[in-house]
Length: 423
Image (cartoon, rainbow, N blue to C red; front, side, top):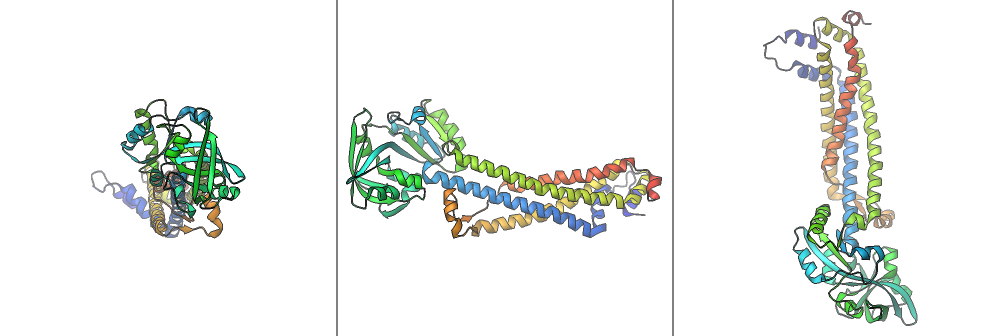
């Protein structure tokens, strides 16, 4: 007589033996150790693969968001809604000084950088090119973003007559450090705005479109030349963490006047948000295929289990065990084999992720330009997250239970006499 039959026969009411289905399910796993370890190994491989790649994805998304927002756009931006629609120079944020102090006092805000933005004609000698002139507070910019630190030659802004040019713009103008650049544009009242600045630095961000047009100058001289008072076009905000930016947007939207538009980074950089979502969907499809293949292998394993143990199940039915009790025993077997596989898979995945969080995965020199284009460093760093640690184990537990239930339903129609005859 099998162990299951002995346990069932001895599990009399009031005997205090507890839950025999659990104990039987655990012991039955080791009646065929090879099958148990092969099934658990498949589950472990699936969990390890999915959890590791999800951790790598989450880490890369965090790096992409942080790098993209830290380059120039910040975590949160505030503008006049009409400026967002038409980018007209006169659509400014008024009383910017008081507003900046108010925003800096908001919990979760690390820094605020005001900007005056306009397009003008830049000339050096006989050469002229269109430029995007940014009037900035250099101290605030250094705290908020990092593009102002990307000086390839020369130095950053210090005096009121200093200018930093994009490397490509400087090459097109034939400008070098120490040259004078003349700025001509249209002021707020429609008159001509003119400035003469000294080139003190050349900026190279690695983004060709930006390096071709960008010119930086101190904000106060730009305001004076273009007829602005205490006004700016944009306020760039850095939060304590990019993940806290959505809640900061909600807070500022409630506290600031309705005449201002508060935007999260995903509205400022929609192409990055879309790229992350597309990559996330592709990853989920791949993970689903991997886990489905493993679940099918578990189904096959339990089909073989049911057929090989037909005589045992027939004997259990003959001595009075109900079909539901037998099915429950198989469910416990599925639970334990999945538990073993998940434990092994998560242990390996967490260990590998923790190690890679320290050393990273080097992408090689050939990938550096590509990585820079997508706001990524030259190394890939995974990140532990609840999603990465919970999704694959949860799916495998559900899939394994269903995989064990489907063939086990055959037991409901099993006739003890036929089963004992081996039919």
